[in-house]
Structures are given as C-alpha cells and as structure tokens.
Image (tube, rainbow, N blue to C red; front, side, top):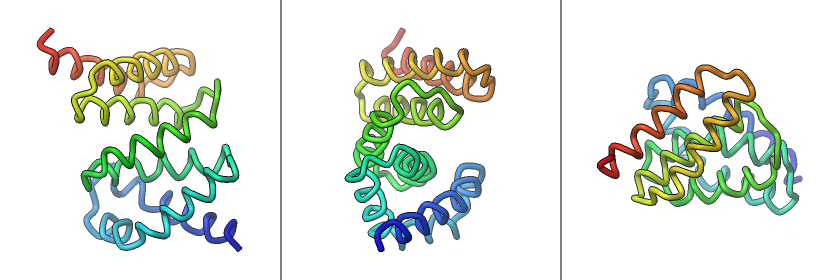
Length: 150
C-alpha cells in the first residue's frame, strides 16, 4: 500500500517541478504545500526502503519548492539522504541535487559544505557534458566566493 502512495506523490512532485522551477507557479506551489505530509510520508518510505530511484527523484523534484518555501534544513536532509543512495551515479538529476544542496548550504551560511557540493556538481557536470548544470555549478561557486568576500 505504501509503494502506490509513494509512486503517486512522486508523479505529483514531478508534475509540479518544472512549473515551480521555471515560474515559480503559485498554483503548483500551493498544491505542494497542501500535500506536504504526503510528500514526507513518501520520502520517509523511500528512505526506509533505500529506494535509489524513488528517493532521489522525489528529493530532486521537491527541492525547488522547499527552497522557495524556506524549508532549507528539510531540503538539505532529504537531498543528503538521496545523494547517499545514488553513490557514484552521474546524471543531470544528481548534478541538480548537488547544486541545490550547495545553494541551500550557502543560504544557511555553511560555506564549507556549500563549496564541497558545488565542487562535486562542477566535476559531475563536466563528466556528463551537462552544460546547463555546469553553469549552475559555476554560479554556485561564484556565489559562495562572493558571500565569503573573496
């Protein structure tokens, strides 16, 4: 019963991701906020079962909405758990998660952690030839240096 629930909310998170990331679309943000407990339940189940597809997919799809809603610590926690499951996988999703985790850490003043994740994102985006996320990783590093006064 929990897998269908988690799968349904993963699909909802994926449907909301692009409009939120590109907008942000207030209607989709509202839906995500309304379903917060269901997303948490899906994330928890995916984490408990170490589902290396569902947890990273959910965490990536929800990361922008968490950021926009100010749920930085929760976002870092779920993204960290998801990144722990993907191991050495290098994909656009992993690069996005690394870049987002870097940005979240930077916003919380944790520049050392931000720099580590931004460096990993930079390396992974170069390995995969992902120019869109390469730009994001470079911007993350520039933001960290700027925030640190370098």
